[in-house]
Image (cartoon, rainbow, N blue to C red; front, side, top):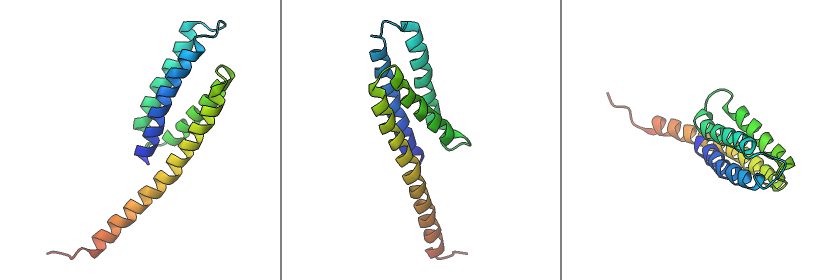
Length: 118
């Protein structure tokens, strides 16, 4: 699960950076505001890569997905990208857990099948 989720978060890192470049074109936003928000969110996405397996890591990832969708109010294309990345996040969590369960089951089967040595 960790690999799939981290890949999604790193993809979001780049999308957030590019969205910041687009948001800079808005005359109603200062460059400092745009990069304070985008920079913080980019750092959060990288830090979450290491927190995925810890308690609350997945929930923080969901909060990041909600923030990405909400950023569509500033950069409208982010509504679409946010929904796409939320779907990727769901797939990463869902299928990552299934992969982890299959790996654990395979490890148990290998241990049981191995002949015991004294």
